[in-house]
Image 1 (cartoon, one colour):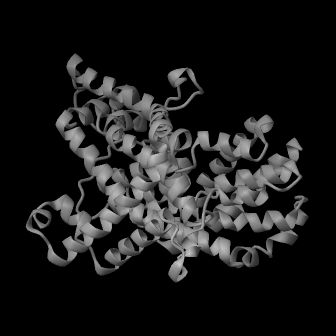
Image 2 (cartoon, rainbow, N blue to C red):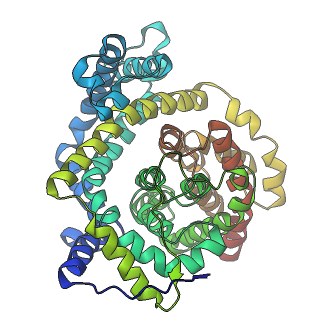
Image 3 (cartoon, rainbow, N blue to C red):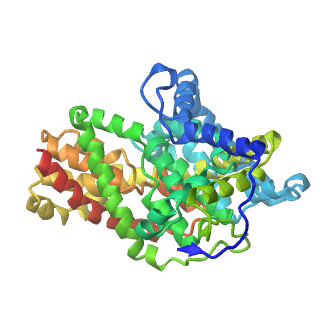
Length: 459
């Protein structure tokens, strides 16, 4: 659709163009465009810095994050009960540490869980939490990855979001994104940052865009559960873990095709179809991707990008924004990841819940001619707890086609309570736990046949 607008084309100065283009290019290099950083494999800049930091200090990160969660519980307790003036008077600190009683309780429990894992405490039933297959997965495996990715992303995200790259590219590809996925063109940046970089970072980008008036509630909901996929580097790891390295191109191709199909279908199904197509209350609507009459798409895209960059904060503002993002993730998000992740993994480890509810899948898998149907069925639904669990379940299968199908499906299911699900629930995006559960089943139903079809074409 072309908006009617008779305004004269703006003259864009060289200074304004450079302020838009240079930071935007750096942001795209850090989050979207993969390069052989350090002479190694192709990856995005943020991923390279995170890996570099983890290689040097990764062994300290589990303990560091445990004490961050403990500090979060202590400060939240003091702030909520006493309400010190310096915290109450600061809007950011007030929002972060003066909480409702339930949030305070959750942070305290999360701190207890984290300490139980770090010090291997087994009394009072905490052995279920401190088990290396439950809380140990969250603290020792997940925390180092999330801590490094969110640290570097927190400081570099403004280069992607504040200097016009999303406005520029969003305007260019709006004509494709809106009819296919019912979302603005700028959401493609969220998708690429997730696919190549990190799914949780994609959710954070989406949440920020929703809070700032670029997405409606419906659009933010669609993007968070359709585009925030697990990263390409992790797909390489899973393929190697399941001995699928030789067929990796087909493996990731199946993930991409199935996810594309799901992204088209799910916005048209409940609960996403019923989300309000309204902006967050109290925010100023900032998106403007429609092309005025008499202007080319490219020139309007450049104008949008330059206009956004003109209002970008200075260096001090960028650093402050980065500190706030990292603090918000570390002190409020990580306790939720600890809590939900541990509970989900305890259910998977100590109860037969996932095995029982997956039994109806056995005849379906047999009908689809999937070998090891019983094992494959058990591995299917456990992905709601954690993305890595299906691969652990199915690794023992002697049939490569079964490992291929379940490994790919674990990516396309997308909703994992240990990270993406927890982050969505913590965000302002209006997606509830019930919504996540429904979407998880919908994604499984929609993507499974696509993956099975591709697998049978290969094997």
